Length: 125
Image (cartoon, rainbow, N blue to C red; front, side, top):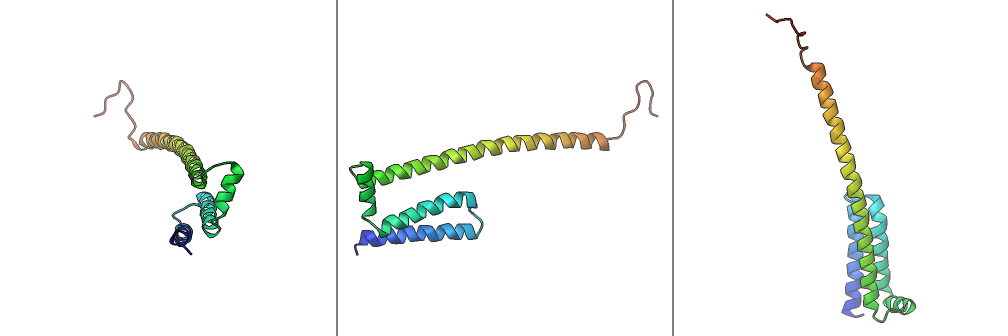
């Protein structure tokens, strides 16, 4: 076995173990974990079967197998970025709505707890 082969297997297995450890500690939500488990298993598969990447590159018509790997990685990263942008926009809207609700509740609380104002024309002595 060559050093590159061992390094590929070791790197992909470390990634998979780190992923499961993040899930176990609840640092990674399940909806994101599905994507990363798929990517990690793909890396393990490519590391265990090195002839798979050149075969896929030939099937797709890519001359250099590494280019196929970089293209797929770029697409995955772009999709993750788009998904995070979508989540960020949704969370910003939710935060704005919650801030408005809190402001209205504070106003209501202040109006209920403040002493009543005296009627116009009467003087408080």
